Image (cartoon, rainbow, N blue to C red):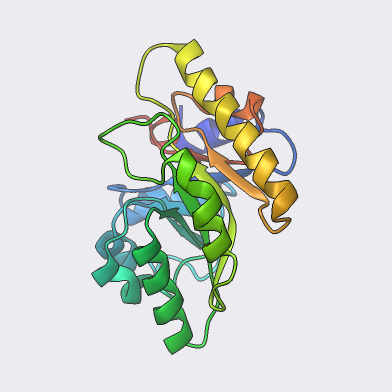
Amino acid sequence: MTIQENILAIQATLPENTTLVCVSKTQSKEKILEAFQAGVRHFGENRVQELVQKLDISDQIHWHLIGHLQRNKVKDVIGHVELIHSLDSIRLMDEVNTQSYKKNLITHGLIQINVAEEKTKHGFHVEELDEVLKKAVNYPNLQIDGFMVIGPHVNDDQAIADVFKKSQALFQYYAQLYPQLKILSMGMSHDYQIALQYGANMVRIGSKIFQE
């Protein structure tokens, strides 16, 4: 199947008002352009350096930074990305706010939560969220739009569903307290259909599009 056929097949499974972020890390500009011509407008990159090299593909692309962001690279992405999915520490959020202030911009971001409590993953622990959100919603130049969750990398649909169900409950609880929380970015190529069952309204799909 072509990239276009893969995209159409995926979009047919997405509920209305779900944003497809095409994960384009390691993909050539030609392949990204192919996905763009198939109608995708949101693309996600893991590394700042790679993202910056691809900015000239089209000014109609909405870029997302979905990988771990180091504080010393923040200044390079401010003004170039629509959404940072991976806000995983207060110090990082402080830096995003500071660099956005310097450029007189408001940057949008998601708080990454390590719901599965995996040692190999970045993200805040669930018990930190009260404190984090109290601070995060008051940044003048960083707007928190929701949460990002990575499902556990296991071949167990029930274990994945348990994490996504817990994530949905957290999102619903905090969205009542903070109405600006609108986005639940959750689900990748192998588990996005489970994520959709638990309220994900933004999915990050790469290999299913590019057939790696």
